Length: 516
Image 1 (cartoon, helix red, strand yellow):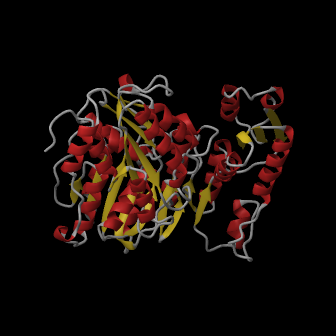
Image 2 (tube, helix red, strand yellow; image 1 turned 90 degrees about the vertical axis):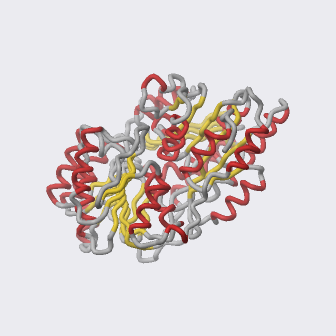
Image 3 (cartoon, helix red, strand yellow; image 1 turned 45 degrees about the vertical axis):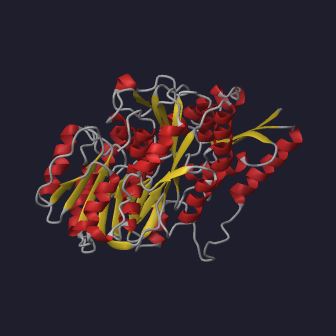
C-alpha cells in the first residue's frame, strides 16, 4: 500500500462539496481510502485515529484543504489525485450558461437585489460570521453548517428575530420554501399544511406521509436541532409559527421535534394554543402526549401527526390506506427466529427515524442503547460495540466528523451491518433508505451487496436474519420509490410503509409473546 498526501494552502470548499468529492473518490478503482477535508482539528483527529496523520498534516491550518489517498501503488494514487482534481474543477453540465458567481454575500445582494434567502455551508469556524452578514443584508438564512457554538446560535437567532427574518439552523438540513426543496428534501405536492421542524429527517418523514395521505406542503421551515434547547429557547420555532400564521398559503401547522427541553416545550405549546390556525404537535419521546383540545392536537409519532394534519384540511379518513400492522407477517417472522435471537439492531441515516424506532422499542423493552439515547445510563460508551437492543444514528456527529453524511455515503453503515449479522442474539436489523434532493442516487442499490452478505453470514451459522427496511420517499422522488422497494423485496428484505411502522414492526418481530 502507498499513501499520497497533498495540502492545498488557503483553499476552502464547503462541507457539501467535500462530502460529494469524498464519496466519489472512495469509489475509484485502486483506492483503499481517500480522505478529502478541511484541516480542522476534528478532521486531523480522524486522520490520527486512522494512522494517517503526519507532521505535514499536523501543521496544516484550518483554511487548508487536505487530500490523503491510501491506494495500491504510487501510480494508482497519482491517478486518484488527478480524478479528485477533476471532481473539483468539473462544471455542472446542467447549470445555466448565465449563472454568475459572487465572491461575497454583499456583492451577490447588490447584483441580485430581489434575493431574500442565503443558504450557507461553510466551515463552522466561519459560519456564524457569514450568517450574520446575510442577516445584516436582510436575507433569511438556511445555515447548513454545523459546529457553530450555542452562543453564536443564540446571538444570530436574536438578530433574526429583531429583523423579522428566518435563521434556519445551524445544522439545518431540510427546508421547502415556496415549493423549492433546500439541501435534503423530498418531492411533495404543494398544499396548505406548513411544517416547522427541529429535525431534518423528521420533517422529511412528516412531509412524505402528508403527501401519501393526499395533502400538500405550503412551507417547511427547519429550525436546527438545538432550537428547542433550554439555551436557545425555541426562538425560531416561535417566530416560524407567527410566519405561518400570517402566511395565506398555510391553513394547518404541524410541529415536529426530538424531545425538547420541558420549559421550552411549554412555551411553544402556549404559543401554538394561541395560534389562529389549527396546530398539530409531534414532540417525540417516551411520555404520553397531552389530550387534544380546540385548535391544538398532539401526536405520538410522525404517521399520526401527518394523519391529523391532513384530516384537519378536510380529507376523509375512510378514503385513506393507513397500513395497519400486519400481524400474520409478525407471526411468520417470530417463527423463523430462534429463542436466542431476541435483539434489534437499528442502523439509521436519519436521526429522527432512529429516534422514532428507538422510542417504540423503549415502550416494550428496558435495555435499549444508542448513541443518541436521552438517558445517559443507556448511552453507548463504545460506539463500535452494540449492547442488547441498539439503535445507531449514523448521521450524528459521532460518525460524521471528517466523513460524508450516510445519506450520501453509506460506507460506515455497510461495515456495521456485517458486524451485526455475526451476532447470534440479533434477530432483526432495521435500516432506513432516504430518497430525495441531496441524498444518494441509489441508496438501496448501493446496500444490496452488504444485505446479501449479512443474510449469508447468518445462514452459514444456521440462523435466519430478518432485515427490515424503510424507504423514505414519495412517488415523485428520484430514484423511484416503487423500484427501490422492489429491490428490497427481491433481496428478501421486508419493508415498512412508514417510519412509525418500522419501529413497531422491529419491536414485535423479536417479541416472544404471541402475536395478536
